[in-house]
Amino acid sequence: MIVTMGTHIAPATVADFHQVLTDHPRYWGERDLRSLHLLALVQEFGSTCLAARGEDGIRGYVFGFVTPDGTGYVHLIATRDDARGTGLGRRLYAAFAEAAARQGARRLKAVTSVGNTGSIAFHRSLGFATEIVDDYNGPGRTMAVFHRDVPSAV
Figure 1 (cartoon, rainbow, N blue to C red):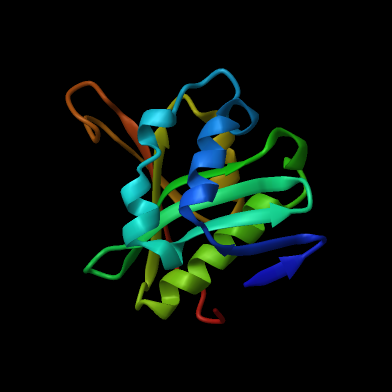
Figure 2 (cartoon, rainbow, N blue to C red):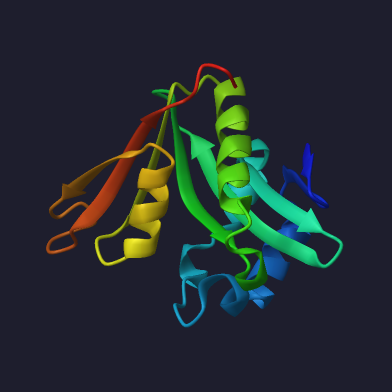
């Protein structure tokens, strides 16, 4: 568990998952991404699905897993509307990288739509290389794919 500025980051629970879905607009605004939230990730990959909790609830979360080839894949990462700009997203990524490294991950990967300029800028600020891949998510579904080595100091 990582504790910083009144927020502690720990493995997400099933209750956390349901709370995130209940508060979905606080994390994603008008974008409805509930279908990307898979309870099986929390149940099967609990050590790499993390929630940042404060006294006022879940401030952010990251859901991911480690692939057999040693890639820590971030499926979703979000911060609540009132926690943006606080560095929480960076802290969540650091906690995920540590958890993934404990499972043998040597690199990190994430994917977003090419129109998600905020996510692209965020990942680049974290040192991710960005590759635009045509048809990544099916015909006509070009995506931005991020790669970065896991820091050796985790």
